[in-house]
Image (cartoon, rainbow, N blue to C red; front, side, top):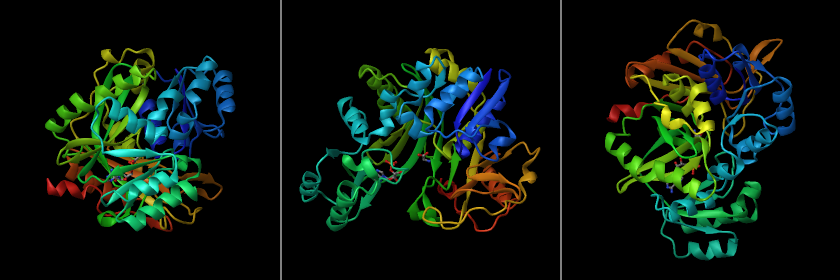
Length: 423
Ligand code: AMP
Ligand code: GLY
């Protein structure tokens, strides 16, 4: 089977690593990929939003399956374009990717189908939003409706901050057209858990849980980032939480999308908050999380190509997802200054230390091959992942492996997975 993965980050490196394990694979391509992915797949210099070129490449090379990993091409309808060209693709169509692409849509869906989430109101007029703020209690959460690289969420501690936030989103258009509409929602407190799932439009299969660390600095300080590290499973995702979510959230979401004429085939990522009133949905994503994929996929026992096929063919009810009875921790090595400004182009040393080490993975997020060797090429550079018998062992192995590589301006958090000490 010839497979093309679309994307270029640590998540795509993790997906390619899983696909490589399949005996069904004959050839793996990635567009555009990165220097790490290039070691296990043939990278082709086509951008993720170049739909016509992706379709043309898939046809010319008789690709059997295209896996679309990032949010932007999913929301803009790459899967639809591929299907129209007779190409099989894994990922939701545009009318289903809206589950992530519009926060106003997802909030209305949850309200209509009784799926637990924070109380909210949607606005497409800034004056109305500003008026509403006068009657709110604080803190309050403002969300730009559309995709905003994970940055379109503002937590405002008082009325003044919220007024400034509404102006930034809706009037100054800080997040572009994503801010034409916005959601204002109740602030929730509790522990966050990421749950990824496979869906075939009717059936949903839940993967093992994970927890992300979004803030840039230790002790959850600093700015929000794409994610500085993850661990899996989350010890806070108990059997009770799982039972509640199975009854109130997961299948209800898949059924709701089907009822709306938007059957969801692909990965639904449930961003959950475990509040004192029970689990609630913070957000949906229509794809694998990054870096969640870097701790979840290495623990999956199934042939991932079988699972992708089942999602496309509507036969997921015949698949029993299985995960190893262990744990994984991923520590992101970033460029100092991320997520604001940082330098790129520094040589990465020590990558060879990962060769032949079974429980260790060095997923590349932002790297590039040059005549000087592999250099840093992004804010997040590498995702250093290790598996262990339990979270403690996985954590100490992952941190040990962060010392195997070096590059100028290397930055990481030192408390990834520390929460497990509280259990
Ligand atoms: P989102 O992109 O919607 O996941 O939001 C990014 C982050 O903002 C989440 O991971 C939470 O940490 C935080 N957040 C979003 N919505 C809320 C909320 N209603 N209450 C508290 N924190 C929130
Ligand atoms: N790590 C969060 C995300 O992928 O959106």
